[in-house]
Amino acid sequence: MPQAGLPEPLVNEDAIGLDSVLRPEQHLVRDEPHIRLGALLTLVAAAGWLRPGEANAADWNKAAFESKSMDETLKALGGGAPVASKDITFVSTPDIAENGAVVPVGVSSTIPKTESIAILIEKNPNMLAATFDIPAGTEPSISTRVKMGQSSNVYALVKADGKYYVTSKEIKVTLGGCGG
Image 1 (cartoon, rainbow, N blue to C red):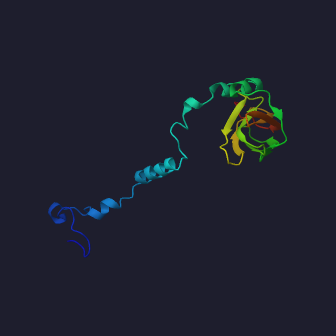
Image 2 (tube, rainbow, N blue to C red):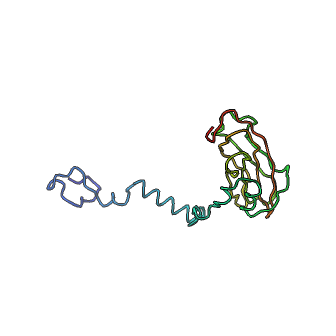
Image 3 (cartoon, one colour):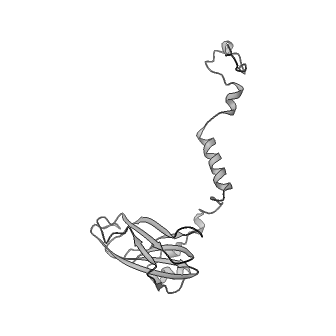
C-alpha cells in the first residue's frame, strides 16, 4: 500500500511477497561507497591534483636508489658536486636513535627555488633512503622515517634552481635496523 505523497512502487509488493521495493526516487539517492569514491577521484583529477602517470613506477630512479656512495648517487640524480649550505636544517631528527628500524628524519630548506630534497645515509647498504619532489609554491620541508643499520652520517641533499646543496648530521643508533 503506497504511503501518502509517495509515488506508486514499481511492482506490486503484495503479489510477489517483497518486504521492500525500490521506488523511483530511491534510484536517485543511492549512497554507495564506490560511487562516492568515483566522484571524489573525478573531482581530484579535475582540480589537477592527480595526473595520469604521476605515480608511475617507470619514473622511479632505480640507479639512484641502488647507489653505494655519494658520488654514485649524485651521478644517478644528474647532479654535480654539492655545495655545503647552512640554509638546510634537520628538523625533529634525533642525535641518538634508540631503534635503527624507525629513525625520524625531517629536513627543511630556505634555499629559494628548492626543487627536491633527498635523504642519504652514508653507512647503509644503499645510500639513498628517500627523495621528495617539491612542487613550486610549496614549503620545502619534509618528514619521514628511515632505516639505519648503524650509527652514520645522514645527508640532506637539496636541489634548488638546478644546483645541489648539502648538509649533514651524525645520528648514533643503539639498536640496528638493517638486519642488525
